[in-house]
Image (cartoon, rainbow, N blue to C red; front, side, top):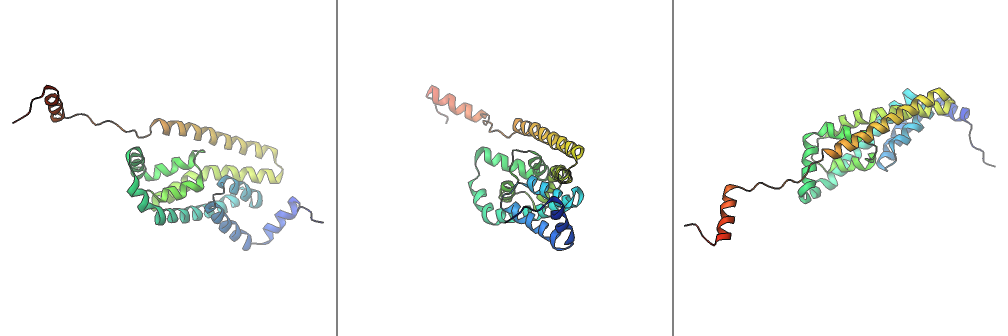
Length: 214
């Protein structure tokens, strides 16, 4: 008859393997990120198994690796097609992202409504540079990763106060991300009608009066 492992036996199994377990954590995080697994779930599990600090490090490394691989796939398979199809507002959005590469990635990582896994592939189809993507992902993903890893560690240890503080941090990040979503939406690029030139006005006047220029 199958039995579920206890918390103590699970932690003992993880900490008894000083090389394999960290390697599996990093590689597994990278693969799962490419498979669109939420990074917050990975951070929670990493914190529960390895502790808040160590779990954060392992998950961050794995998440960065998976994000970079996804970015490369998007760049290789989708950039040429997307560049040829950009029109109107979508072209304005792409230009804004390219101009503010690092900040655009940081903001996307902080907004809870932007799926992390999908955005990795999507950023690859834009003209943003790789270093901007890497730096923005590291800075933007770190706060939530730390908070969820701390929450996982406190939950696994049965620490109510630690879980409460970590939960508050998660809530603050969620509220801040929601406010950021609204601010980004308010400043979204918009199509603006071109102002008529003086020559356009003259042409319209002649068309209405039936005159023509020599």
